[in-house]
Length: 154
Image (cartoon, rainbow, N blue to C red; front, side):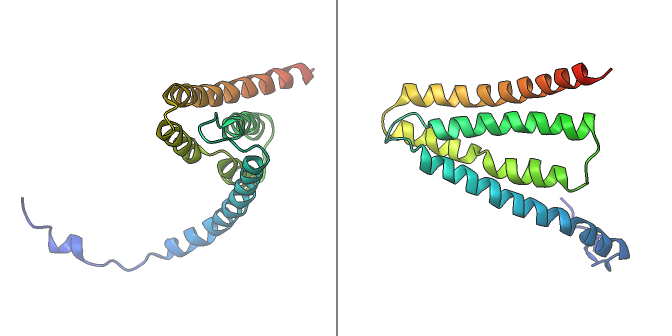
């Protein structure tokens, strides 16, 4: 193993383009943060409204993930195939709102808690059913949106 070349360790001055890149990305970061907060708040409200009992199947998280993925399917078809949208719509709705609404981290914690409560069968069912439902929802929603679009065209 050799030591790195001194040239590669030299601190390079910032290029003028870096400043412009941040200025261009700042609105995207802002709308993702705002949308993520809104989506997470909606998910939290769903969990409060439909709490899972200790060791019970976490239906709220399951349906939030499936519904969020269905909306992502519709959104992506609309903004990529049907009409052009403002450059901040996709980051706000897709990454922000729907990214904050859907929750695969809570899904993982739910599986862990089911195992800790000795509900191995329920944990395995939930472990398999959630990604299956999410993928099916996004596929069905995208397909339905494409078909609905095709029917409206002359």
